[in-house]
Length: 411
Image 1 (cartoon, rainbow, N blue to C red):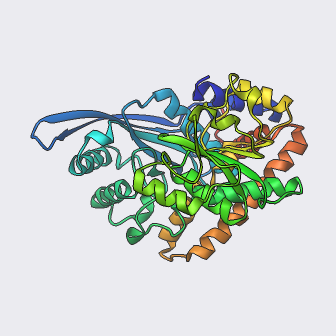
Image 2 (cartoon, one colour):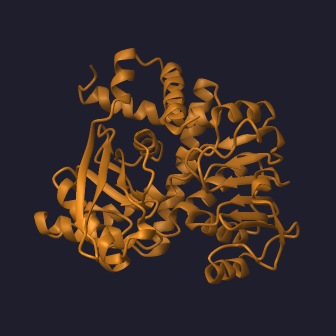
């Protein structure tokens, strides 16, 4: 099931539980604006190349729209729509004053030189500069983009609007980026896991973890969990997968992955088939890679008691049903991986105030938001007698619906 169908399905279930009227429900689903622009740049060899850039701005009832910009050859409009909508509910669950957006450029960043990427980013910014802004829409990095991309957007935007560091987040520290932003999603996953285990009278220490994905989120989650005494028994990435029932030495693995561009060939564990990673024996499974990886084919074989969704949309609705019958507790993505957007919010706040925080304050505030977020989700679970996913969706949808009605926007 694709991401848009699954997101719409969850939204409709939440709307039904909340008893929203059909007109309001329909208006909450329709994106505020969809932008599509042609970006033509001279390549290094002097030839011209054209790319399609786009931005879906989903909802701004609770504040400026917020979401990543990805550079990827197969940018699917449906997926971008789903991710923009997901950002609307995610920011509402985190209780930060934003709505959702998502965008990108259909290109293969690996095939472009740094100067070509810079020209492409600047042309894209020229085309959309009057549709984004500090109080309108605040982009951030996503697949294939990073702090340098944000620096180029900031510079190009500032040519039109004066120096505006708050127009993007995920910037380099030297240009007003926030300390703790790099680790934020992984740090949020740690705090979310702690909140969930606490509810069940457990702590991270001594639990056995399996992590799928060793990019930014997976690597930070692994490092922080192992520092708290969690035992990581298997990890995979695009290069391969490794397993060690005594626990993988994470600092050594991080060093190996940096040197060899992945986990493959690491000597502190046995090599296993990456396809089997999700069904390895463990207490807590953390999918931190792609969407749709837990489906009806493998759901029955999952041995974990808890699943923490660090990736976007890793569990298909069919798998959701199978797992809930087995008594597996799933902490949904719109809460579990909201640490990144929460620290993006802190970065925006620091830029607007012109006053930067130290890393300790960033992490302390993030912990407060994640802990409070979990309590709010649990309240909705009690009110509507539902699982954590529906608890999070009803919480997010309800906050956006209330803001929409209060602003007099309902149809």
